[in-house]
Image (cartoon, rainbow, N blue to C red; front, side, top):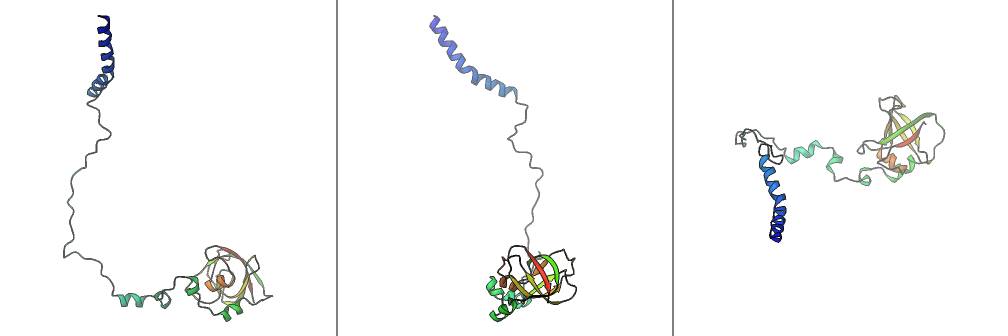
Length: 181
């Protein structure tokens, strides 16, 4: 008889946890389910465009090409193809030059790569004049100093040809000394 009572108690103890869980869930029937989706709200009718809907017009290809500059119409995508200076022009720009008045230092970034020649657009000058720029490593180039209209400490932009002649990274900012000639 004791064995039967023990078996019954074992069975009840195994069923106690699932039964208590069911009773607890039944008691919580009024609590909102956090995993249930919220009410989507009223449905909204979406209209599809019809034949009367105004749509953007595409430009004819010839007109779009005519709006581009000659350089942009080419497949030029590298510094080699954008830099149109000749070896003679590069040699003249990098020829050793001394003298001139020091105007100051500037932090230069790459200017418009489609604008050819050797130039520096800076706030250190108020009118175009011949000049020279020199990097801390000693590389220098003779350039046309062009006014930027900004304050002298506002930074400068230098031409692609000048960057390449001085072997400077095109993506970095470079501290340059600026001289007049």
